[in-house]
Image (cartoon, rainbow, N blue to C red; front, side):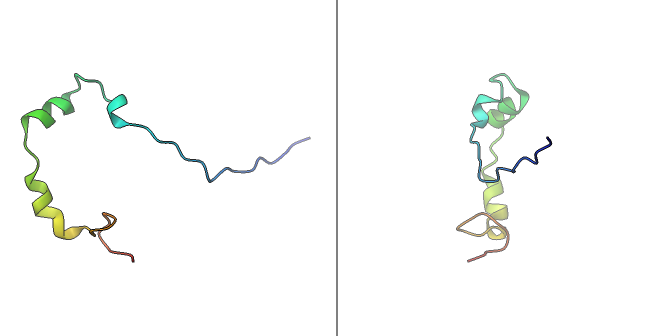
Length: 58
């Protein structure tokens, strides 16, 4: 008999990006060599303070 499986929509999985990106990956080298902190000042007014979205939904 064929059964329709219920979808489990309440599941979530957490992982750490650090565990998936190798230590010798090119992007890690770029991150060490380039200071990207100025970007936060350039785009700060485009994000909501409490959730990071471009449109605040309170």
